[in-house]
Every structure is written in structure tokens, then in C-alpha cells.
Length: 144
Image (cartoon, rainbow, N blue to C red):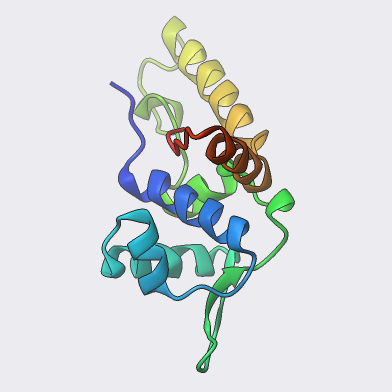
């Protein structure tokens, strides 16, 4: 079974939350709103900051905010920051003694490319807008 870890899923939720608020947010406020421990939120924010997806602000009104417009942050960016390279099979990125004769390696590579293209085509702004629409209709879901 292929599954993203909580790092990628929660980091995406955090950025959607931040995009909807459009202001500096304290990790405690994010944690409470998203039902994630503050320590885990902090770990994710550090990864997102290292990837230049969020920036930190000091002071009484400090916290974290998006480092760039949510229209310019894709789910692929978030997953790269938290999950690393997403491959469907280890043989796609590693040397494999059967690489020259393995028909399925090409399939895993092609499917992985399509998955990465899908994530690259979805922005945090688009998901934030979808969340707003879902909230207005009474149905708010963050699953991706």
C-alpha cells in the first residue's frame, strides 16, 4: 500500500490553514485548530522553513507565515520538504541489477511521474479556496 506519512499530510493542512488566515500564526494556535501536537507542528514548521515555504517572525505578534504567495506553493513543494522524493518503488531511484531487463521498472517510473505531476498541479491557494467552499456548504475535509 502506498501511503504518505503524517508529515506530508499534516504539513499540507498547516499551510492551508495559514493561507486561509493570511497572517502570522503561533504554532500553538495552529496545533489547536488542526488537532496536532504543538511539538509536531513545530517540527513540521522547521522543515517548511528550511524549504522556504514559511518564515518565522519574532516578538509579541510573531509566529509563522507563508514565505510566498499560496498560489506559488504546490503540494509537490510541501511533500518534497517533508517526505523527500516520492517514488513508487525503490528500484526507480536506486541501481538495480535487473534495470535493463525489468519491464515493470518503467511502469513504476511513469506512474511516479504522473503522481508528482498531479501534486505539482495543486496549489495551497486552490486547496484553501476549496476549504472555504466546503466550509460554506457545511462540509470541511482536508484529506488529499
